[in-house]
Length: 192
Image (cartoon, rainbow, N blue to C red; front, top):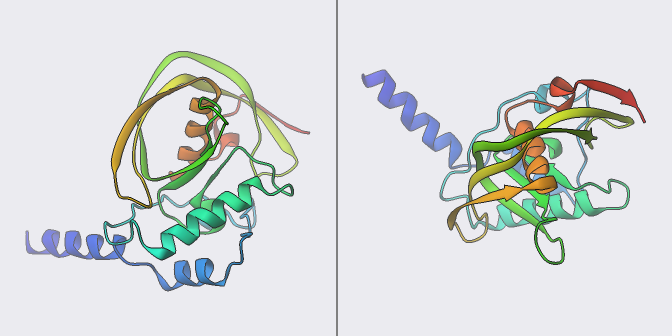
């Protein structure tokens, strides 16, 4: 019991502080971050991400990370619709997703995100990934998801149901947080 409590305390401390590597990646970045790619960066991309502790939510560093992830995914060199923190070398549960289901189709960031349930018919569709350049795949995805998350700036907890293409983006990005790539789920992968 004593060791279990010690492990839990160590786990909470590790979630609530930035690692030296995370600090270096965020603090040394300008606005455009390096995007990790397979196979050379598979050690990072295949690692399961952990939550942000409460003291990191709303911090200046998580604000920088969010801003840099948004800038990176929207940069013409990337031209993506979503990005997950592991794709920029940070194994934490954060994604930035273009919300095609909202007016203006804004990009938004979500910390400690989870997919709570999957609904609707499964649809097959094409996917690509910033971390798997030059390839596309046909991937089965659910058409509706229930998500829960924390706003990285305010710390407000929220949940919502998302449909259609945006639901597919959330599934793709949340897979990254579990070390899963779209090529693992694709029925077919081809060079584009």
